[in-house]
Length: 479
Image (cartoon, rainbow, N blue to C red; front, side, top):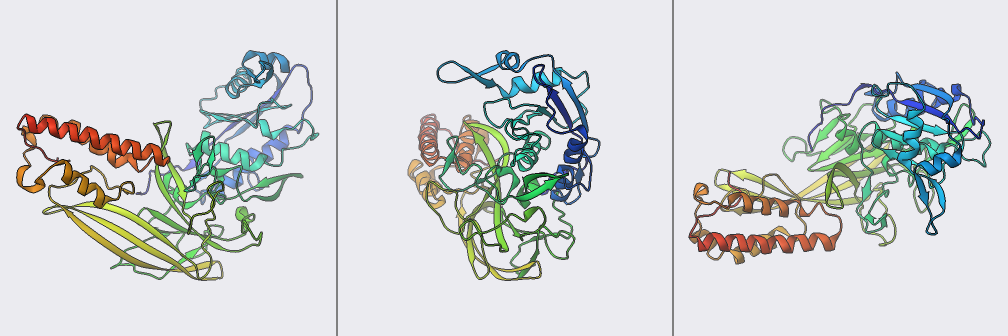
């Protein structure tokens, strides 16, 4: 993953305070919401995103509108776009319906804001709300049974939803088979705000109202938004130039000397301590505060077969129970093994390299972690240039098995097949099939992944057979 174009500067949001016609209740005055969202140095959400981005962005320019009567009772709002239970009874309003009704009540140009947060004076039912496009229904911000109160999860929840709606971030994951909404690993990175509400939060207060806040964003997600400084704050592992050991500084102390992150292949290695917005980071089983090293990766995220963008996965030192999020902390004197397969061009074709890095935490001292890296690799040359258009990490099936299968599909691999691309009319079809294999390891569900690999092999076999019958020459991915 390369450094991205930086998201920087002021990222203003709009907060719409909406009252229903049958309730004049105002949970908090406008000034309190300004402390929560707009002002700096109130320990509100503007401060959070300023700190989480290492000062790259603020929410300056944000504005609170209201309180305003939207001209609908609660029942009228529910009936406008209802959520119904299994018996057909209306129990709430859809997220988009509640957002639309709130926005329509204000005669304001919302296009200049990165996102719009709609807050109602009483609960909308049907769950905690969430984001839809650039809109956020802050349903968890107000709870009927807490007079004047903010739901205890409101701060982390709102920071998380702003990450979606304003900055385009996707939820974060771990590699466990544990599912939420039938999605493996979803919301399992307890050290990352994009896994709210399963995160390690802490007791916090904004202008006298108690909430749960934190944690920070992981460094892989920061890189997606262009917030990592590659000039001097990110170390790039290289066995010849920078073999280590390396010293990492805590994300809670970005002004301290040292590296914020270490890039090792596709992996991001970071150091976290229990302070600032990470105050809630305690060990999930012992409950004790401790510093920890974490490892993340960026990968393409597909939902129901549709590409949604890049997301982050936290890596576990060892698997845990299938029905739980796994443990991800790497503590002092512990290690974690990382693997990646990379294909690169050579003068004679290409080579596949299987990398294995063993990352060991040597010590924690004065907000610094010292780590070492042991590297091993195995290379396999390929005869006819790259099989894929991009480097890949191919786990199912293993790459050597993949090569053996291709040799079975194409007898006399080297002897019979030439490299004359122009004579091969099915080149695009073969390239597309090989690209499908390249992307197969991005699919989280193993059964779906194996099925796609098997189906693609069969299609590739049929395509090559067609080319052979036509006495055509063939190559694989040669441009």
